[in-house]
Amino acid sequence: MLSQIKDLAEQLAPRLIEIRRHFHSHPELSGEEYQTAAYVAGVLSSCGVHVREGVAKTGVIGELVGQGEDDGWLAIRTDMDALPIAERTDLEYASQKADVMHACGHDVHATVGLGTAMVLSQLKETLPGNVRFLFQPAEEIAQGAGWMVKDGAMEKVKGIFGLHVFPTIPAGSVGIRHGALTAAADDLEIIIQGESGHGARPHQAIDAIWIASQVITTLQQAISRTHNPLRPVVLTIGQITGGRAPNVIADTVKLLGTVRSLHPDTHAELPGWIEQIVAGVCQMYGAKYHLNYRRGVPSVQNDPIMNQALESAAVEAWGSDRVQILPEPSLGAEDFSLYLEHAPGSMFRLGVGHRDKPNYPLHHPQFSIDESAIVTGVVTLAYAACKYWQLP
Ligand SMILES: [Zn+2]
Ligand SMILES: [Zn+2]
Image (cartoon, rainbow, N blue to C red; front, side, top):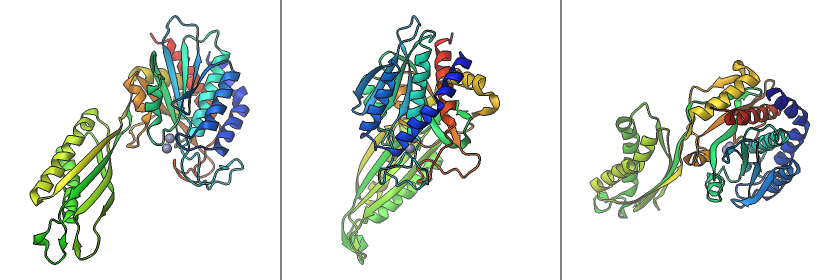
């Protein structure tokens, strides 16, 4: 099966590069992936995959029924949205849309999803189980996965694979991570309410700027003293607003931040922990507060069995020297984790790094990829799908 998959993927390579360049030239922002979705649906239909359009508004689901007894599905998720970034590459297929760019490689993900569907559809007679392809909108705003789940994407799904391109891994290699891959990311809003007064007479006022600075300092000090240091957590206040004039004591200060953690227990205790500190500091100095802690996405925790299918597929396909076992997770976030609330899964990193020119990070206006990685992604996923259905 592996050699058939490799041959098919190699034959498809020129077409896949053409598809990827089309997506790259025509990027669409989160929740606006109308043209991309229509293109995806067209390619899926042309290779005999059953298509559902309008899932999560601009998402697409493709279903390929295999030969197994099991009526469950293996899902393969790829995302399709671009970013509000003005592209600064000199590629001939650079973005044709001002200030919108595929700078996170979701053009590659969607192409790899299509390539995997094209390859597996040609192996339908021997495909050992059913495969559902999820083409998800709005990953960059961490909303699309939730919308897809709500629209039934995970019904009868028993396992799920996903991928993300990575420029620091060379094209031709893949990265596998055991355990946590990405962090839980939540949003934080704290409003401190004091009382205004003359800058010369602080004792007649309640200084919200000073109290806000105490809140920030206490949060940053306590985070290192009250959480298990083996379970990382990062709190960043990225925005402060408040005050009207140099000689007027501010009555209101608003703090906005992000909170990242890896362990589910830490994630669970964070809102209560933050509230305790904010309440304690405000009470000490007579201020009132309003805390709005918004849960974002949980941490992506790769499942050992799903990982095994991916890793063994990748090692057989490429050799162990081209399969990196990633020693560290990332404190970035991924809404792939929302699918994992419904089925075990694994997400791998697809190396897209150039060997002969500089590699720019994800979300950079000069981000680009070595396109040979597309075939690596297709073969890895198509073969992992076959392996999945043969797991004991
Ligand atoms: Zn991104
Ligand atoms: Zn991304």
